Image 1 (cartoon, rainbow, N blue to C red):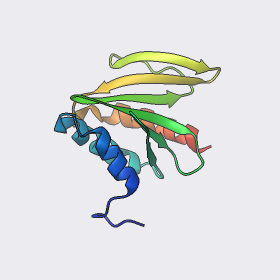
Image 2: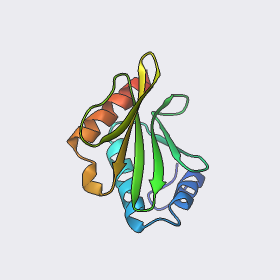
Image 3: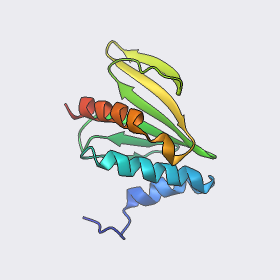
Length: 127
């Protein structure tokens, strides 16, 4: 298990996605991951242009992070559509699954409302 100062290959891969972005994008991602780790197991799986978040090894994804120049586009997977001014887009992908898209432009965007949505998404993925 890595110590707090060690980095894993996944950490390095995730870091590469932020290499050409404003530093605020990585700051938001780090704040998001800090909040998510309070929910329990969270595995970040870097892909070519995004980071897939699961509730542990062998579980389905509950969120996706897409780095942008000065923020992150966050896709939260839920069993019902989310509503609110900051939901940019909601897509029903199956009978009981929705992808809800938000743009996070500051660490303060990770508030109680978002933490609640993420907790529910994490719970669904943990089943």
